Amino acid sequence: MSETATPGLRARKKERTRRLIADTAQALFRERGFDRVTVAEVAAAADVSEGTVFNYFPAKEDLFWSGMEVFEARLVEEVAARPDGETVLAAFRKVVFDGIPRLADPSRAGVIAAARSTIQASEGLRAREREIVARYTAELADVIAADTGARPHDPEPLAAAAALMGAQRALVAFVHERVAAGESGPKLAAAARAQARRVFSLLGDGLGGYAARPRSAGRAARTAPPAPT
Image (cartoon, rainbow, N blue to C red; front, side, top):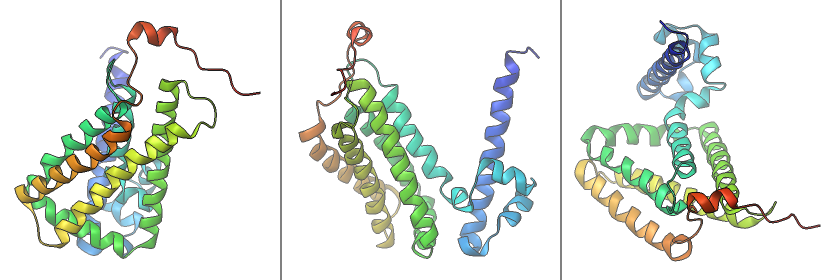
């Protein structure tokens, strides 16, 4: 094996271990409830040490929210990597719509219902959710600020990031409520898609042309305006 291949192999192995631990924890949480499962039990079921679990997930709440964190990170990453000429809104919207088809799987409703019940029963999980949203909102704001050359403490990038993340979390809440009302499968996916179109259309009135990525030549020449003295 070449030396250049080793880091990639190591990264894939770490990702497989992380996914195994997260999937094992989710299964246990669905079966017995979040508060009734210990980290030690997750470690035993995944056949790893308790220390290994904490290496990947510093807190028990992180085990529950692992999927959400992956998705929130992808939102930020896709905005940061959007092509020339594409707006923040368009890049963000694309990721949200890419996730909607999974709702058409009838089994997803059961998973969502179980997660909703677990979240409602745990203030710790709700607090951790708020922390995750706040962190990725700040990261998205940093990406937008860098692309627009915003001055330090300019509120616009954070306002835009908060609007986008707020829209995404509102859609999550919408899906949870529709599942609680008994909806599932293709009907659930269709409802989520229709609601997402409405939400992003609303944002488009104010953010539709905001922070379009400049063409490459212009981007290289762009400099941030001086900070106020």
